[in-house]
Image 1: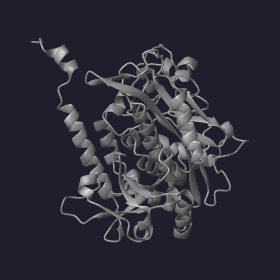
Image 2: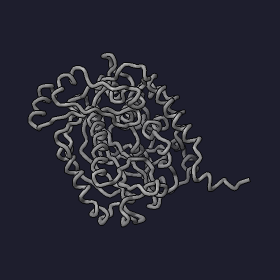
Image 3: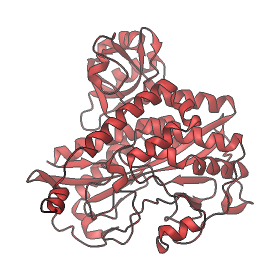
Image 4: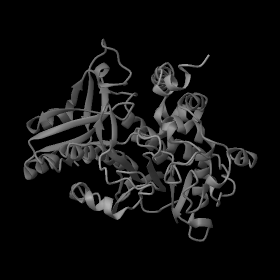
Length: 443
């Protein structure tokens, strides 16, 4: 979208303000609001931020301003306040692309893939809880939503029709093509699905979707959380990535081969091989918090399954494996969770898959059984690896992975490891209520 087209759209829609937004390492959105009359200046120079104050962006308090220059193709009018338009941005310092910008990192990986004739398409499926705060903690907001197996519960969905239909209507107003929304496998948990598109657009949509969902929840006095594991006994929040690789022009799905097993091409199987090879290092990006690894466990929840595979496997339409093949021409990466930075996760996944293609990595035979029916020891005995059991273990794997180091950039990887190891150390040094109850009278 050109500057003149954006100006015309602003006049047509009556937009008075622009929300210039970007995400930092942890996927947290930062923004400034500027009058629409400043459009030309914003397009030319961007909007300035004190980078040190805006999260983990590789800056100190002495550094020059970070300038957020919006991508006009990402423009979304706020459905609940139509005089405001939101725009995703890339970060610059002193006129140069800032290498600590997650969106810029993804674009760099996409450029390398494009030079090889590839374009990644994606569809993302965020899960979230609606909760209320009570007694310093949280609880599912609807006391009637208490079934042990609540997935697809019609009555629970009906009680939330006002919220759900407002969400669907808002996204469809933006042209996203929502095709389903459901009550998920935990109490007061929901998922929404929209049409797939270019992966950069999908990351922008997911970033905006989190903003939209939280805003609609707050209007009802609720909190929407994408936290991977907010409740010990309930299924956690995933964000499955459906992926297909196309030619650079976006005309031919290079993953599709209806004459081959599961309707996937050899290129797709090599891509899967790359994801399997780098799975343990990828976890540090796609499951990026201490809390993420409380979702990635082998024991079931009260519903009977975690729906978060921890075994490094792939298979057909099998939700117990890490990479599912839901239909011809696409795969589903099931271990991305609600805390993942969309841009970093997509960049790391694409880099791993491209390594698989370039080195023709054989993924081996698919696993078509129920992984939950086996013990860890039984699967390890069959040569199946398991994902890291905690964030610290995942960070060690990431540090040793040269492919992901190159994709993210050495300096960014160093910062990422520093930030996340500090997070692990803070968690590890915290004394929990569980420890008090367990060890207070020991010895």
